[in-house]
Length: 335
Image (cartoon, helix red, strand yellow):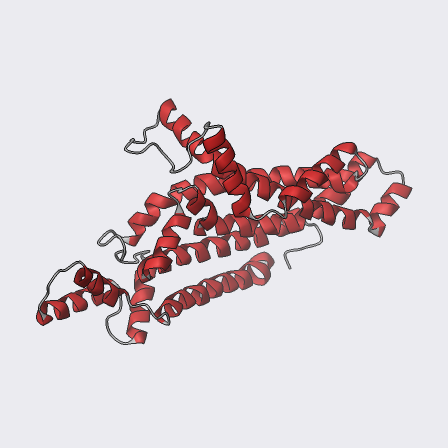
C-alpha cells in the first residue's frame, strides 16, 4: 500500500498532468499561427481556376470548419478537441483531404518505428558497452582507435554524413536504393522478397542513424564511467580486494547505466515524431516526412495528431522508467 500511496499515485497524477498540459499546448499553438487551413483550402481551388459562387463558398467554409474542429468559440473548439482526443480522432487531413489523420499516421508509423526503434536500441547497446569499457580501460589500443573515429564522426553534421553515405553507396557504388521504403509500385507481402527489399531501402538511413547514435552514447557513457571510477566507494572496493570484474560490472557500469537508461527512455519516445532530416534525405515514408508536410501546408489536424501521439509516448516512456528505477538503482526506494 505504501508503494501505491506514496510512489505510484503521485507519479500517475504527474503523468496525466503532463499529458493534459502537452495536448493543451498542441491545441492552442497552431491556432496562433498566421496560416488558416480553411482559407488555404479555398485559395487552392481558386488558383486552380475553379469558380464558386458566394453561397457555395460559405457552405464549404462551414463544412471545413466543422471537419477541422474550428467551429464555435475557442473554448468550444477546445472542448470538442478533448472529446475527439479521447477517441484518437483528429479529423481529416488538409493536404491529403479527405483522408483521416489517424489513417495517415497508421500508414507512416510502422516505417518510422521499424527504422528508428531498431537503430536507437542497437546504437544504445553498442555505444553503452563500448563506452563503459573505454571509460574503465582508457589506455587500451582499441579505445584510442574508437576515440579517433568518434572524434571524426560525432562532430560531423548529420546531413553531411547522410549525404556522404547516399553518394558513396547509392551513386559511386550503387549497392543500395537511394530513396523510398519499398520498390515503386510494389506491394508489400510477408515473403522473403519483401523483407529483403525493405531492408535494402532502410540500410542507408539506418546506417547513418546508427553511426551518429553509437558515438553519442559511446562518448556519454565513457565520461560517466570515468566519473564513477574516481568515486570513493570504487577505490575502497579496490583496496578491499574486491575482484576487478565485480568492480567493473556491479560498481561502475551498473551505476553509470542509470543516466543512459533515462536518455534511452527519452529517445524511444522521440522516435514517434520521426527523424525529419533522415526521412527527407532518403525520401523515407515515415513520420518525419508526414510532419514536414503537415508544417509546410499548415495542416492543423495532422500536426495535432502527430504531436499528441509523440507527447503520450514520451511521457509514458519516462513514467515507466521512473517506476522501474528502484529496481535498477538500490538507492531509490518506493517510499
